[in-house]
Length: 275
Image (cartoon, rainbow, N blue to C red; front, top):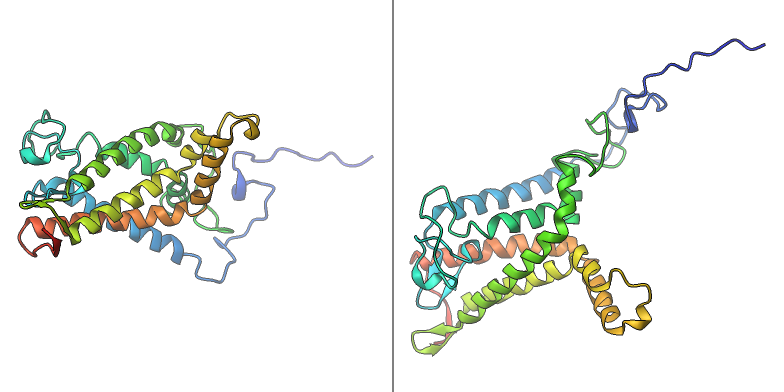
């Protein structure tokens, strides 16, 4: 008869902390510079967050009256402190320093990006560290996925997609009415920047996984829905580069705001081609 075995083991840990896994003192056996990618991602996110936060609370140099340039960080401008010409949809928010002029849109845009599938993967590895990189032990003893607070909030992404689409329509309107000058129709470098930014915002929004589900989800037979199948195919092509569009739009947003700020403050003059 074999000797009895003691099966009492600590099963509180999961993943690399499981009692059944090899106990390796090193955090990882990788010899490459695996930490570079998370650091670069963190620096990129930090640069955008710092810039966007500072600009949102500056409450100045956001609109160029002569050419109707409105930075996306202040659109739509609902505060009573907004320049009347920049408020296309009314003014009803109080003018206080701690409330951004576009307070009704910025939080939803932030949540849309925070819950985006690409951004999840990016800050899960960098901020949440689950895990930081392949074959690198994460600091969490347990893994519950997106079933508990705070990560369960990620499931609201589909709703923020609809709001982001509406705001993209507003940004498109801003870009269209900017083709005006004191002499009528006008076209300058600012128009190019505004149009490129809004086009990329649409590409990023439409390439979203939720958009892919909206146009092609809940169908049993694509053959019976050729239009939706075509739309799903086109969105799927964009979805492959969703990560690229996510980073490009962070850059175009900052560039657009920075250019409008320089022109509105009188630091530079807009390069005009017509008008």
